[in-house]
Length: 207
Image (cartoon, rainbow, N blue to C red; front, side, top):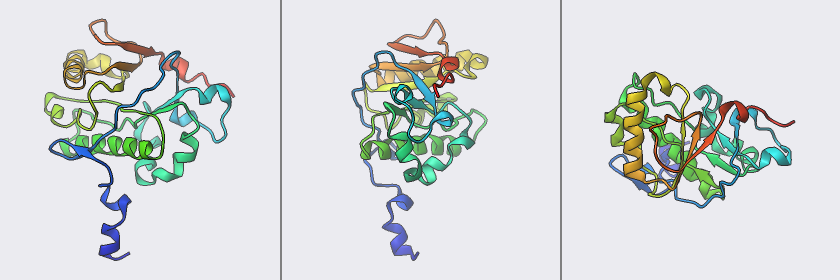
């Protein structure tokens, strides 16, 4: 493929969607989603032509990155399987504090781009929010409209409670989320409209 055709390829330029912030991170638009009896299923547990019980769940990506790396590179391949579920959390690409910031920025941008792509394909999407150190606040909340429903994961946060709560408070101030899907047990200090999902229950898949 020559350079002109490459630059006209939306999957090469990744600039098809409105963006925000210094880094032009794609925007995941605010959507209404009925969160009564909210339940989640792991991306690693989804199947083609899944049953009606599982289809009523949202899909989460609080699993190892390698299990869903292909979603950003080839998003169309998984779309048909994902589209049968109630809603989709954006991929939780890692933003570990020992990663260089360009890698953390890349993780956030990839997650938002996938969310914008899914919305463009008619899916209901909840942005997953993650952060590391205060320096990551420059980009990790970008691309999410105020008063959106958001999702956060608690796995591994117990070891760095102070840093987590600092970022959580910053998220509340910047996004003012209408609801927060919390995957795992929250800290008692966490404020907001929390909808807690037990990660053990999410692995009890009906087949």
